[in-house]
Amino acid sequence: MSAEHFGWEERILFSSKEIAERNALLISRGLNVPENADLIIGLYEGDTLIATGSLVGTVLQGIAVSSQTEGEGAAAAIVSSLIKNAVNRGIQHLFLFSSAQEANRFEALGFSLLASTAQILAFSDFLEGANGAALLEWPTGQIDNWLNSLKPVVEGKPYGSGAVVVNCNPFTLGHRALIEYAALKSPWLYVIVVEEDRSLFPFNVRFELVKKGTADIKNITVLKGGQYVISSATFPTYFIRPKNSEADTVSIAVSLHAALDLILFRRYIAPALKVTDRFVGTEPYCPTTSSYNKMMKKILPAAKGEGVPIRVHEIPRFEIEGAAVSASRVRDLLRSGNIHAIKPLVPETTWQWLTSAEALPVIKKIQHSNSRH
Image 1: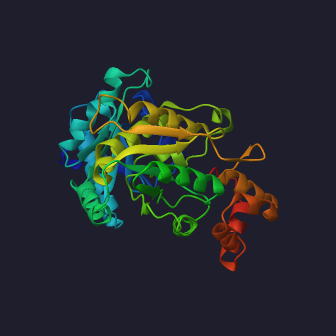
Image 2: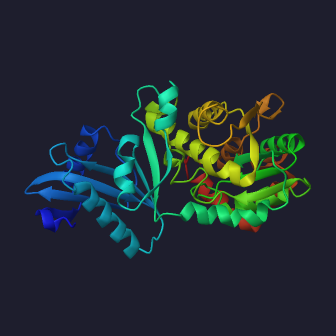
């Protein structure tokens, strides 16, 4: 039923007073305040905010109902309004984060459950203090369509394949070393490139650099990650630069999002690709990625959980003269204008692109940005 049926007034929230009220409601319900919302909706009973929800890209976040209004249909009214607004904006596929305990409420509204931390919280202590989270999508069946699109890629490939998930911002000799090692240890290797276009190097560039930089390795397939592998839907906090005070810490939200992404990989993606092993390099610099790796080593090989346990191989970061080779190091050198110091750190194909006219706008963007990615 609509908000009007209950006598509630629906508003799009703009003013600082309205946003402060919305933030207070979220915090009172133990929820994080979403960043970079495209649309924030509130339901009012008189002058009192009783429910709120946000659209962030293709993700519904920050859905909260006051304790006094629970069970009266306010959450359904918020979700229905957000879906309507998203469709009007041309968005046909939506994701939603909720607490693990409330996921069934949204399933009743036409969402399907993709992943929930409820099961791992039942037998693990590595998310101690968390209430659990769930990831759902609308309309139902979208992930099945994506998995079906992988069938021609997988046809004829062996069971027991390996997987590497990379961002490659840009592709370096460190990435190349990891992929070489994984390909050597696997009958077939899937290199899955994060498709979310929120890195300084555009996705089409990153994807092509990976393909060209690994063209000589015969037993690999380079795949686009789509919306189900480290995306704004599965792992939104991966793309958010931590505040200075949080630079060396990892929030519960990061841990929960990392867990959902990995549960999704184990439940759907690994079986579709016949993957039994996942390879990753050590991460000495980024606390978010380091936390993701730790979570990976707990969730993927666990005896419990949906899907077959997946072995995780963490190999030391590739180094040159005692210093780790990383994409962030390459970006720092680009910021400082020391481009010639980059050549020993990247494959020839990456170097050729960096010194081409096509790279100039990207390099200029990097030099004027402090983005973590």
